[in-house]
Amino acid sequence: MGEPGGGQFRNYEFLFSHFVPTLKKSGISEAQIRTLLISNPKRSLDPKIRKRAA
Image (tube, rainbow, N blue to C red; front, side):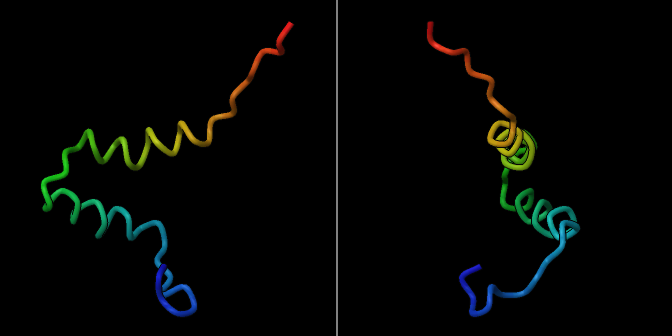
């Protein structure tokens, strides 16, 4: 991202082998990491069922 041609490809393993440890070393809490990687994506991808107005 932000690099010509999209930059270097990284698979999902990168998240857990490099990204999360870097966040922890930077002082990001487990709760914040959980929000970033689980709660926010879940909320954005969950289908919303809306009731029709009467």
